[in-house]
Amino acid sequence: MSQQSYLSSEPFQAQQQGVKAKFFLFADGGYPPYGSTIVTTEKMLAENPNVVARFVKASLEGWRDYFKNPEPGNALIKADNPKMTDAQIAFAIDRLKRTKALDGGDAATGGIGTMTAARWKQTYDFLVAADLLDPKTEWHKAFTDRFVKDLKVAF
Image (tube, rainbow, N blue to C red; front, side, top):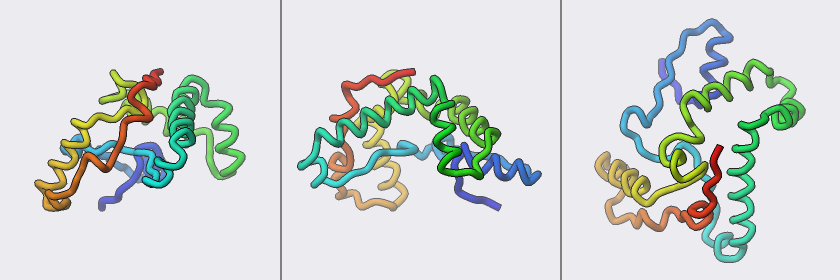
């Protein structure tokens, strides 16, 4: 059986049920997109760039600060989700750290949340080669690095 999941979540649930699970990162198979991105609209970018900039900066700094001291965040997580356990949270943090989900790849040199045109182009090329994207797609319009290129938020 195969199931899409997050490395920080479903494998833990499987283990808790006594099910042996293997997790395969798509990136290990050559799939190049970033794992998570912040998405907004062109209208929001045009009308509220300062709000977007503050949101992006706060999000990246929040991840950095959480990894330095997760306890305040964990308390909020458990308050909002009483079913969340310390073991689940510890598993998630361990997996994120072990796989360098936040500070590996481009983030190792550019900081948390960094993006590069080269990586977006690689994603475009991959999708076009797999007949999943029209080659006429203007891939460079799909992202902007203007809110992260000078932040350099690092652990």
